[in-house]
Length: 118
Image (cartoon, rainbow, N blue to C red):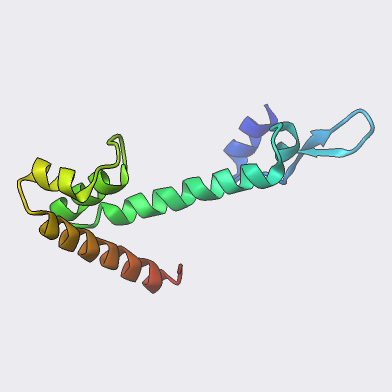
């Protein structure tokens, strides 16, 4: 209930915000009740945000670049594929797949560097 109330009041909830007290009067935070090492939970949350940022940038790529990266790295629902498998599926050469992949990765790297996220 406390989390629902906080959610209505403010948009962000920190894993370290106090949400109550235990029997001994010690403050309890959300991370305490998740039942996992706090560093693991923080890493999972950070990875989720980073993944979402990456997917936003991938959607800005051309259709072909996006398709090659999705197939190559298993983004979304597809499994990871080799450049040769991608080339067969798209009806292009393996070297062209390599060039498309390299160009797309360079665009993403440049976009992240512009944001200051190296």
